[in-house]
Amino acid sequence: MEQTLQELNTAWIQAGQRVSDLRAKRTLDMLDENVSVEEIATLSARLEAAEVKLDIAHLKYQNALNAGQTENNGDDKMNQKQKEIKAAYANLILQKPMTAEQKALVIIDDGTGNPVWQEEVFTDFQRPFQSIKQFVNVIPVKTFAGTFVFEDPSGITELTELVDYDSQIQEDDEKLESIRYKIRRFGSIIPVSLSNIQDSPESVIDILQASHEKKKARTENIEIFKMLQNAIATPSTLSSHLDLEKSLINDIDPALKDSVVIATNQSGFSKLVSTLDSTGNLENFLIYKMIDGYNSPVIFFNGFRIVYVSDEELPNVNGSAPFVFGSLFLSLKYFDKGTLLKSSLSYKFNQAMVSTRFIDQFDVQVANTDYQYGLMPLS
Image (cartoon, rainbow, N blue to C red):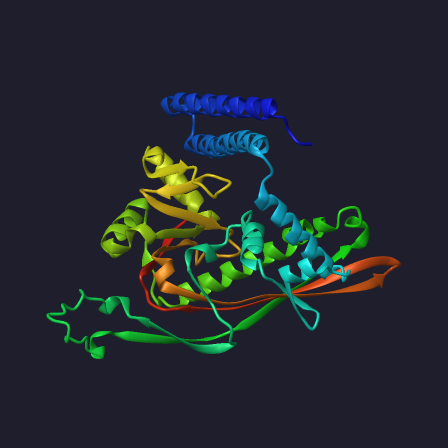
């Protein structure tokens, strides 16, 4: 049931009160010698979760407030366009007749569809899932194999001065590198009962979102981290957050500071939080901020963006949590040939089904090591 503006406001206030109560309790417990370190760590985890819920509650209230203002100002043309795209997309999947306008929104080739608005639609789909793809260099390609040429960052120097109009830049001054890519195909088949979507055909998009796009983000993460880890034979040892902080300062080019991202898994983030909390540095190092375009708080470690995925997507290594940090955008190239889909109607056990086959086509290659790979012991 959709909440009213007043209910969202009340939920925001109540979430704030819970955070205030937990902060006060943690302060008292830290002064109480009878309270164990484990109990404080548990309370800190509860506080962290409450703070995130507070930010989300505030975001929901703000979004509802803004939505109300938008409605008062007139119809949202983008929302209408999204509805049209969903309707065309659903007709393609359900193999229904399409109008000329709907066909204009969808590219159809021998029954295989690839939405013209694919980037907008699929980006919206993937937002609920943590995808590392958003931090790397995505390069759209049309061929299944090829060579990508780029300037070697390690050889970048200052500009060449042109003394007069006849001056020429020697081609040898540019240190170029090349990497080869070979597109791989990853697929899934999503069956959906027609009875689940007959009332609102457009809802098939939301149903597919909950299954395929989660698999897609998970697969992308596994492949990206696999390449990043394999490119560095010997990872460094990060005994604590202090080693991580030092490496960010000493081992990463300061010119790349704005593009630096720290990536770890659930175990690594939990270890980082507990270590910072036990030393009283949690609030100094970890900061949660709301940023336009994100539905949940963005986390920063000492000024650097930090993200974490599941332990299954980025497994621990011999009892240590992996940390990959640096300019992932410059380091890794994601060659994207797009997503293909094809649907078919079938009857199984007297139930009408529509099965949609998704094929994601991409390859990932490490271009250079403008990043670090380290392991932080969990015990």
